[in-house]
Image 1 (cartoon, one colour):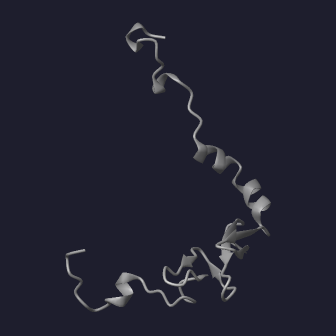
Image 2: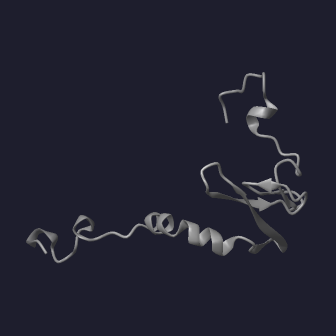
Image 3: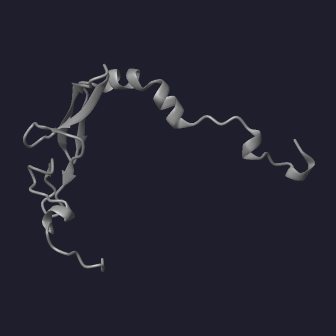
Length: 107
């Protein structure tokens, strides 16, 4: 410990364990452990599904509880609290809705 530290350690003097490094190291084991797992979100059971990637990996997806299609993200409808993918809930991205129109610069 250096005298200028006033009795406290500095972060750059310590060994750091980064969670992202651990997750990267055990990624394949974690994926295998959660494949086939079901989650409960808002009282609705949501399953995971997988697809193979071109270089031998595995990609995880949500199985949409409404239409059973693969989805990277699920959406909760703020009005009726339905849970589903963007297509099931008829949700557009801002750019889709205003395609061809000039968006105002005020938000």
